[in-house]
Image (cartoon, rainbow, N blue to C red):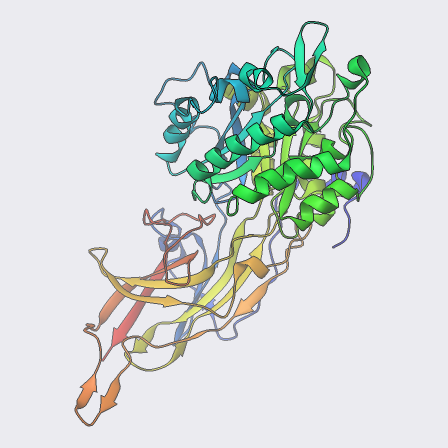
Length: 507
């Protein structure tokens, strides 16, 4: 993929995704009732028709999407419990923030396990369930050192013999390589993994027991006590999490490699990658340009196969330091090929003052699955072969990592499912990522049969299916036809199937 340099990015950043080139279908003419296809109960777009087929070029509605493994993450707890979910009513999951998919819960270890073996899961499960009830997601970080809390690691860990370092009477930092400390960390992580690993609503867990705020650096404390920890200690922390979180995506901060050490490849990030651990960058717009971030090159190893997570500075702090820049915020999503971006402030203040760039980011963050064009027969006969031709592209910055398959569903006027046709010839995971306006289209022409016949000496058998005119829906999801992904179109039936038109089924 061609790299986007800063100059060309700033020239093009304001452009929405351009129209995509798709294959032509000779013999089609504009539908005489185009307005009918623009109603909210159908996918809007350019409808064409000939004697045997319909064809539709769908129109993107331009709104944010809520999909797995992408979107905005809201700091409900940002280490301090009052930031930033404390002002929300229990029923308020900030649904008005476009693209908010995930609640992020980052708290000190001492708050979750104040006594050995006694856990305060209520602290995490309460906000998590609010978002889960809305069909959304949750992510975690548990830290062992905080700049504002003397014992972020529980006091009982040191009473058990773990060593640590007092920092001016304000912070007690553990020795991250101390065997007692590592033993207690492992027991905690093991217990946490039993509770959350493999939960489909838990989308990532930070490896957070190393460094200030769990970011993997000790730049604030090492000058005080003189102790440093190297690559092998960092590997031990990664290994602890990997031993117990075997299904949920794990990640480390880019600062494991050095908070301001520029470069593309580092031994610790290579090791993380080898263990299936991705990266997050917590330094977006912490400092003004040209130090607006340090590690976009580092993301090149990760984003083709794993989601990259970005966190901007506390919004007000970034503004006060004159580091906040909307164009650079959008550029960070492009350069890192980010699947996630943080809401690192009071969410509605951030939205009110940055709605324009938030809307632009939502056109690119993660993946955005586009049905560029679809053609289907006006009438098909039960048991006989026919094709539905489609052209798809991904207009986001990241792959659709979990993948999925196009599906075409016939429904009657009462919403009953008449036929489910899954296109297993094309996986949307394989759609290429490209610059804005340059999405690469992939075409599929699967062959289907509805209620095919099976003939035996005992007779001819086929499932019950009535002829008639039915509504045709398109979706993307599992191989069994279950929709998974929200598509950027109107006409949603409430289950992420999108009504594109009618089809006649005959005997």
